[in-house]
Length: 111
Image (cartoon, rainbow, N blue to C red; front, top):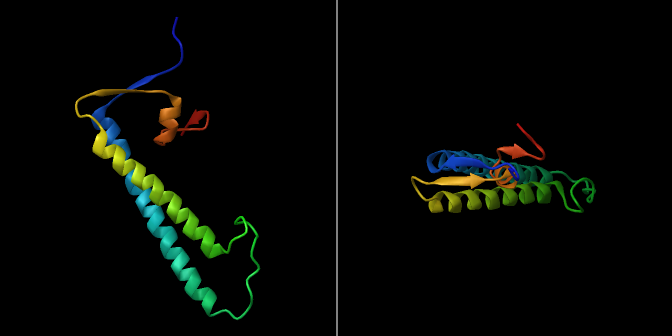
């Protein structure tokens, strides 16, 4: 009897996935930070009051962009750590939760 579905992934393939995800999150963090800085600069020149609390959990659009930047930086930090701790020439057995964490499986399906 087989219980569950596990996938064996070689360390070099896992490292490749981690490096790709690290680059993705670093770029996203940078983009959101740049957008937040640009938006903050633009908002300073606007004399109207900002209506806060819509679509961002109570913060301003700048707060939302900064939060997204931090989330992506946290993910980038995780991938950077994992890259440094993969044991070379080994095989890792991953379940669906692992595949979701590394961005291979989304929800209950694959993309």
